[in-house]
Length: 262
Image (cartoon, rainbow, N blue to C red; front, side, top):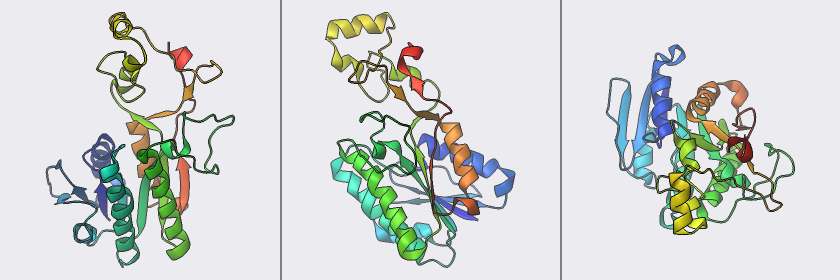
């Protein structure tokens, strides 16, 4: 097995590579990473290709001899870049896969932004059968496009792929920092922008915890996943025939209830 990992310098990519290379099941496997700006150190089992995923020549070089692809590369709400990564990058990867005699499996890490997660009301749990409903912005749209592109390659070419749809991915003190009224807030909402500067300062100093509410005033319940749990799902899906052309929501056994947290 030779696996290509895109977006390998992020927290999911680095954690996955460490566990992949240490796992007995993959003891004879090697990895190649496609890096754009940040680089990883090469080893006997880890090769680095540097370049833009939107460049077909770079993708062709990165895909040479690859049997499995783990596609993690993404970008947030940056309209100038999102289509290069989401459309061109993924398209070149899929085109190389379908034309390769070595290729065996494509694993996409999707995102629940494409389902509108906590942005829209969901009277019942979100399942794999629910239609896409991206919230405003190009990032959520990109998550929908990725899943649809992969699904169509199943239809067009019977490609062996799998999508693991992940929620907000946490590690270390990430979750604690999501509840901060200070500049150290992780992700969104940026709570300090929703109150006055004076109140934000007071709340931050007193370690007051915000409680996100729905339009009816009920505390929001939101899905998260720890990076180690997502990596466990990735390793289970890799080279697993039961994962062929499947979509899996990756989640905890129960959502985070903002009132209970407070």
